[in-house]
Image (cartoon, rainbow over the protein chains, first blue to last red):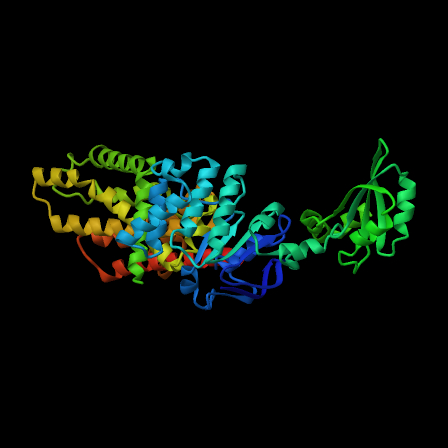
Length: 318
Length: 248
């Protein structure tokens, strides 16, 4: 549905988006991750046709966003960053306007508005002016605007920003449900969201894509992926460490905790261990009393940090 | 899709925005008060003893508009840019032109409404004497066209900035120039300083010069063309400004 090819955006001398390519097909929810200022919003603004690209191309449903902007935009529902809405209108008036400008008239418009209102739970504030709404309601009003014409493609810029945990949960459910039939791209910097809704995620840093894969694949990149936590009873930590270092797949062992005769250590695998570490450690430790043996899945936030941290900070932490 | 439907959708929204905020009411009340005050007290409507609205009423319009039209136009784009709704508007399946024309049209219709509400003055002059209603009508048309020219200039300055105040001040200065270029005292000074051709060129840019014809009851195509071309040019400039903002 969305195809982005070699997209470039230059502001003055700064390359805000630098040679970004990816695609989103129907039934896919693509999470767009990155630190603030990485170029997420700029990319989304180019996809929706708000900003013209400095280079490269975007096609939505086969329509080029620069050459055939009207046809392409018809397919898109867009929730901009900070969820802007006309503050002088009521929620009802605003949604009516959005439906009308999308070409919906008469009965079709009424149906579309009531469907969007129901979907985003806006009945309570329907005749209130947008100005007086709380942030959560304002956000949902703008969200309702983006789905009013039941678009094939949804572009959501930080759709859960500023919502309380319950609302966040609702919006995620909504995105996941709609993701079955549409192509959705949404940006966030909350990593748990990626696990909760995305079928695929892209990490972008300083305008470039630095990682692209399913949440599972991204997690594999973590140093923690495949690490083993071992808790044994009645053995000194030094003895455990020494023994584990003899296991060929172990790269590094750290003692996490030692008290009341319980020792907890963590062993990190060498590259290419491919999950074989747990059984190797289990073998090495078979003569001890094992309280716990657990394989770590890897943490997305750690992957995110290690990929997007500026080099200078990386050096300093080493 | 019919472009006029899109334009009309935008226009309706903008008109709604005027009337859901105090701007519309404050503007109309002040405009009518000014009209009444200047016509009857400063303009000496009764002392003139003639059934005409030209000198006591329409003469003041370029000066009223100088302050009031930039106040109507200043929010058009500046507000959209400040609140970020411009991102919504320009990613809808409409062209930038439709948005620009729709917004302009809304403000222009609003000014038309304010003008129409001055009808008691027309009734008064008809009650007291036998004025030439044709002249009054053409003067109204001219006044509305002039307001449109001011408004289109306010569109440009509004698109230039996020700040409504900055927009107001710049368009006021530009409109002041358009008035002064044809203001008799300024013309006198110019005639002593510059060649006659230059003076003609400068005065031909003035709204005063072109409004004059309408006040005499003459619908001169050159005058109409002048106002329409100011509007067209200004709206075109607005579209260029909006595009360059986004090009970064």
